[in-house]
Image (cartoon, rainbow, N blue to C red):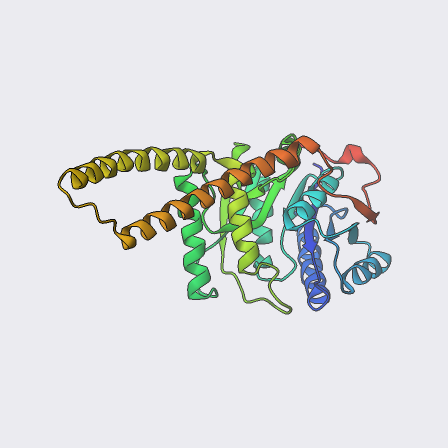
Length: 327
């Protein structure tokens, strides 16, 4: 029986402070799995440098020279976490039976990777790493994250609760996912759409080992908005409903104004006028902005620009591709 060829794909952006620790940790995991005969000796780590400004790529490049288990890719500029991860998946699927994606900050528990492999060997095409609790998050981040999942559910998108991008995908799952051609691929939403047999592995997330978070509040908002507008038209329908509601209200307001005029109470109210102007003005600007988000996505899609550009590829591909098998 052929052993499973595993690639662990790790997107990196300015991770020089934590890279050495991350590489050593994941390398130990790989070696342990090989020692248990759970994966092939041709398995490897794949680090994807997403246009880092520090010495991250130099560290990756050096590691590929001296460690046969390490491969690397360098994107020509910063394309964003999701596209960097997609670049790694698209490259790794060429020579792997399954791929595990994990962030470079070591917050996700690498100890459950063994369970990922066991679940894969039991027939699961997708294995989600799911946080069992969010104690390490601040009160604000914890509640905004929960609000995000609830909002996405109301928008009609089924996400795996408390799951980020720590997951295992089989070769077949990745190949099918790559058939989705949208420019801005929201992986957390696309993967559940594949419909293959899946399971969850729960773990406790740790504090960041070193460095700073690459997802400040601004990027979190942009990420959430990207997810919503990529999978649902309900916000547009909400605007339509609000427009209808305010049209009805305006009819009653007009009737009220006429009645007041006939009764001789014609003095206009400054407060009510200002409230109406600001309320309607704010709603109109918000509506135009939301419609603009959808138009912007259409604009990006029709140009059909590449999702990423690879500047340097140091992947150590499996020599005999016939050894890579899928279910």
